[in-house]
Every structure is written in C-alpha cells, then in structure tokens.
Length: 245
Ligand SMILES: Nc1ncnc2c1ncn2[C@@H]1O[C@H](COP(=O)(O)OP(=O)(O)OP(=O)(O)O)[C@@H](O)[C@H]1O
Ligand SMILES: [Mg+2]
Image (cartoon, rainbow, N blue to C red; front, side):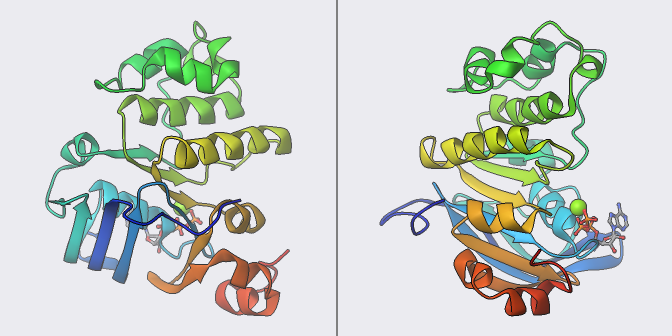
C-alpha cells in the first residue's frame, strides 16, 4: 500500500501523449495519455484482449506507432529502437517470461547486465530464493523462480522505469506476497517508476495508489485505486461482470 503517488518535485520518467499504436496497419491503442514519476506505480487492468500487453510493448518499441509521442525522462523515444529505449532506462518483464532455458540462472542475469547499481549479487540479495538456484538452468526452476529471474534480469539493465506484464500469473499466494513486497521495495526504496499490468484485480488495486482501466484500446479510467476498491458496481461497469470478485 502507498500514500499519494510521487512527492513534490519528483522527476517525470515516462510520458505518453496522444499515442495510437498497433500491429502493422491495425490500430489497437488509441488516444493514450498518461505520465509517471519516479517512485510511483500505476496498475493497469482490463478484460482480456483490451490492449494491456500492447501498451507495454508500445512503450518498449515493439509495435507500430501511428500517432503521438513517448518520452523516457526528457528523451523523445517514439521512434527509437527498443534496445535504445532499454538503454534510456526502460526494463521490461514480458508476459511470457522469456528465460533462456539452457543458460543457468546466473548466466540469464549476466547476459542482461549493464553498468549501474544492480549486479547479480544484488539481485540475489533481493531474491534469496534465486540465489540458491544460481547454478540451475532456466528450465530447472519453478514458475515463481522464473518470474523472479525475469524481474532480476530486467533489473540488471539498471532501469528507472519497470514494465511488468502479469507478474503474479500462475504463482502460489505465498510467492505472490513475496513478489508484491519486492515490487513495493523497488518503488519505495529504489524510486523506480512501475507500470504493473495485472489480472488479479485485488492485487492491482492494493499495490498501486493509482489505477488505469483499459477497454478496447483506450484508457477509460485513470484515478485513485481506492475509488474502484470502494465501488464494486463502478468497477464492474468498467471491466465487466465478476471483476470485483
Ligand atoms: N502480435 C500481434 N499481432 C496482431 N494483433 C495482435 C498481436 N498481439 C495482440 N494483438 C491484438 O491486439 C489486441 C490487444 O491484445 P493484447 O495482447 O494487448 O491484450 P491484453 O489486454 O494484454 O490481453 P490479455 O489479458 O489476454 O493478456 C487483441 O485484439 C489482440 O488480438
Ligand atoms: Mg496481455
């Protein structure tokens, strides 16, 4: 849980203005506007297929931009290739965890290393369970460990903005709790800006002070999570029956 997002004078790390994007000629996202400061997280929720993954992929430069502008800090990144966006401070944890199965846990981390505060040692400090698996191959670790590895690998690039696509998917509740604490630590102590796409509505609304709801490629709500938590009828109206579970 957090207090109000950002503090006075917090640096703006990400901004999307009037973004329309999709796959080739197909436009999936329209009129996307939002900005995020250091030390702020925003949860993104919405039914299947509304464009949540496409939003993160667009920020990373993996889709076709049709209109608008994306800034990473002061840098206009709308036309930059994805590896340059990563270098400018973006870290991405994709929905498919994309662990290299034949590399060890340690090797999976080292391939992503860029100079900065995060080292393999520090990732192992943040995820002690991973440390015990350092020599195991990517295909010899559990789903929870793969998810931690995927986050650890993103951190090895020393990002200031972390994009997480459904990190809790398929994890046992106790592992989810550890993951939530790790994400909160990255936000509150490391001051990362975090975009969290999450199917678990309760988790999404609890973790971030602010939530975006998407529907058919657009942001249909951008405001306090608590307003949705306290109003299941409104939440249901925004994302459909049963969402408030
Ligand atoms: N690589 C692609 N090429 C073409 N269309 C795609 C591609 N990936 C996704 N789409 C389409 O874009 C739309 C948004 O998909 P997206 O994966 O962003 O949704 P999502 O909100 O992440 O869904 P989920 O909750 O199932 O992960 C869907 O209509 C989907 O079919
Ligand atoms: Mg998705």
